[in-house]
Amino acid sequence: MNIACMRDAYRADHRGWLFNFFWPFTRYIVTHLVVTTLGTLIFFVLNRTKVIGRANVPRERNTLLLSNHQSMIDSFLLGMCAFYGPSLFKPYLVPWNPAAEENFYANRFVGWWSDQSKCIPVRPGRRDLKALNRMMRALRSGTMILFPEGTRTRDGSIGKGRAGAGIVILQNRPVVIPVVVDGMNEVLPIGRVLPKIGKRVFVMFGEPFDYSDYLDREASKETSEALVEEVMQELRGRLAELRSRYRQQTDERAGE
Image (cartoon, rainbow, N blue to C red; front, side):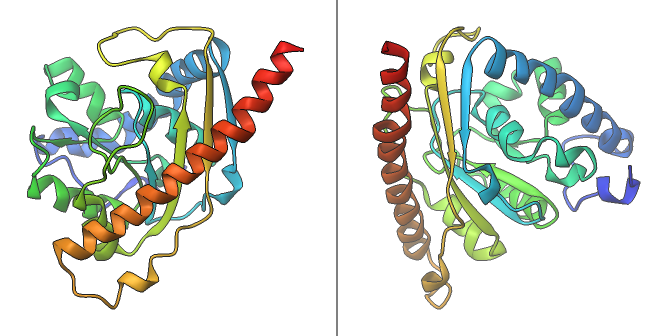
């Protein structure tokens, strides 16, 4: 393993120098041993997860996955499906995950675990400029998962996106991969602590999203909002396709 590949522009500013010194090694171990083991058990053994379009995800830095949001562990599922395997030799592929402080940094142990899982703390209210700058620094040297809605769904539908994701895109100009996940709101719905078992989960990775029309526009909140809304429309269309095509076929086969 190349040590230089484990270094990135982002540092845990809320931690001391000693933590940051060992951090590339500790998070490599946690993400590849612990997270992968638990994720395989939860998503592929206890629940049935089907992955579609994994080849659409590039194995390069400055890659951004934009997804709908159904559960607190969506980012672990998407990270595993998109990057794990190649990330053993390219640790920068393990994605960064902006995470709500009130959930992922509720105490020292949970905060430590979240840091090892490459979470970036975001203050309640989500208008956190420091977190936004951290996200852009991290994305330049690695990959990231963002949920433009900023909150989890209660009914499986896709809500309105927020401008923050658009700002990150216009500033960093990453490869943007639209992703839809379906079924995770049944595995770990809002208010539940432990995942359910025996559920059917689908993950669909789309082709890179073309946002070139927005690059010549004024860098404003309105431009960011318009860009995010177009992404959300893309996600809604893909979710409808996933449910009508793949989930329906799977249900019909199960009923035979």
